[in-house]
Length: 348
Ligand code: FES
Image (tube, rainbow, N blue to C red):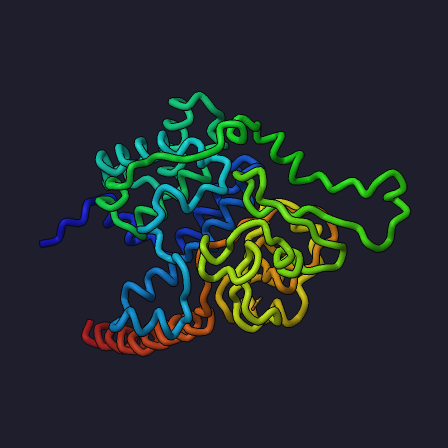
């Protein structure tokens, strides 16, 4: 028996293209504090990978083939995957209003995905008495979460958050100021050309989640010197420091990170990083300073705030081949359609 709700049917028709057009449209409505974070969240939970796994004949085999490690499924982290968004603090209100929206969804209204996201963000902003722009990113993440988990699983998550009260009191402007700030290099720091030290923040919700690195060191190198916690106990992929690493040479893809603030203070993407990050599937861009980087390649030239995804894999090549297969089958079908049209014309 098909128990799919009308809202789920609508979302299941929202493919990657719809989502990327929706995000492009929404970006200008998202507060600056969450503009990068929202794009990073969508890169961390790609719809194309979710669909490929869902449609695989042997899912377990495909997961192994793509070397997926860690928590790549949203169903296990409905209330937590977006904790690095400022809007996460409004998640209880967003989740409640999104569920109401799903229950009252009326397909005949023919509202676009972007308009629906804005409607829910507006209503949750009214309840939380905050500016709508602070809730658009988290609301978009909520819609995608339902698309990947289903409405029943989404509703069964408690909708609670756990944040340090002191940190939640920070205003968006304060967070933006902190992200922009560089470490002082001492009284004569402006004369220093070597041995400059920079702070890397790897979790803005944890006041102690910081480490230092020296000018020119890559993000992973600096992280490895951080011995303050039992990293393996926190995440078995973390063999040293907060960032999981294996090869340190852009070969494994374990060390990918999102850059919340300070992307411009990282060295440009080199040829190898640029080629491999696309092969892994993390990002498709020719930008010299993108929001997703390989930590073992990205050298810091200032203080940076990053977020570490809870999983890694190598799926870019596979998804590209899948797309090409689908395009090829569509092309095989279309000549038939043309000849049918020609036949019909002849008959008429
Ligand atoms: S540690 Fe392997 S790609 Fe960075």
